[in-house]
Length: 277
Ligand code: NDP
Image (cartoon, rainbow, N blue to C red; front, side, top):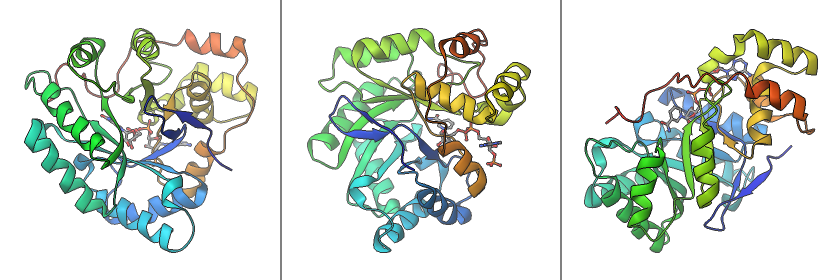
């Protein structure tokens, strides 16, 4: 089984479904990423902040050496942490991530948070534009940016971010932000697509999932897929990885989509981008 591919504004193709490794302990990362690759995941989402880029790189390099995957079929994302914002620091931060990953190029590099108090994200993004021009990264983007941050960024940058990775799940549906993305050709990518697991006990989603004879995790991931949103759930067992990857092929009906639309509570399980950094 493979994930559908989405096309970024850079022309690069990204698997819609990925595997995220936030809170995967460094000593387990190599094994879990290997299991994810064996399951069929080709998009792996890490960050300098997760302290597990080495394990991601190790698993990826081994899987290539073993003939399990080709580098061209993989899509590796990493993110620059807040204390490395600024033009020169960002270039240095990228080099450090690449040294930990042990890869020749990165598929996507993201500014992890806008950190508006620092007011360095525009300068940081200029460094990202250089990395793109130098061919060190295939696409550049941002994470946790609100429309106000994107608007400022677009004013003085020549490259539109390919992706904005934000918290999104049925309790936080991000309507206005997604409309902004659609207007500018930015792909929405959902972090914590299962609201860190909390969503799985939502009684209305349980009821819908039961009707469809799928799990709540699969329902939430099908919903994101059908909205054209890329998702990067984290899971710690091969069974869960498989469940989250092997989604029913059929699109959800308009009736089901309408019922999920009613569950929006504008509720974050993660941090507010206005206050981080
Ligand atoms: P998720 O919404 O992916 O939820 C993960 C939790 O759900 C884990 O506790 C996991 O348990 C559980 N789970 C996963 N699949 C299933 C399943 N099928 N059935 C039951 N439980 C399940 O939360 P994350 O916060 O991990 O977000 C996913 C990824 O998004 C991160 O790993 C990271 O890559 C990215 N991220 C990015 C952020 C950013 O600022 N850019 C912020 C936060 C996350 P278990 O692990 O025990 O299997």
